[in-house]
Length: 108
Image (tube, rainbow, N blue to C red):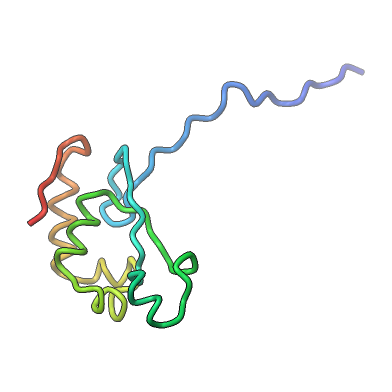
């Protein structure tokens, strides 16, 4: 009986493009957003490496920190679902999804 060769792992499967946790755009560079800000987590006695995080594009990350205080982010908005329930975040994400990922977005 003939032997079967094991399945080849070459070429490697294409890597999936990184996507933003809020706007879900495929962008080349993501930043780590602490869902509970580090300053607030330390006050609660939680170590920084144990705080929950999500990877966000630069525009979404800047928008969150310009729109909400650290206390708001730590209290009510400490999950992606809670952030997406906010009307201001929904409006921003809806607008941002229409922008190409290569375009630089200015957040006010």
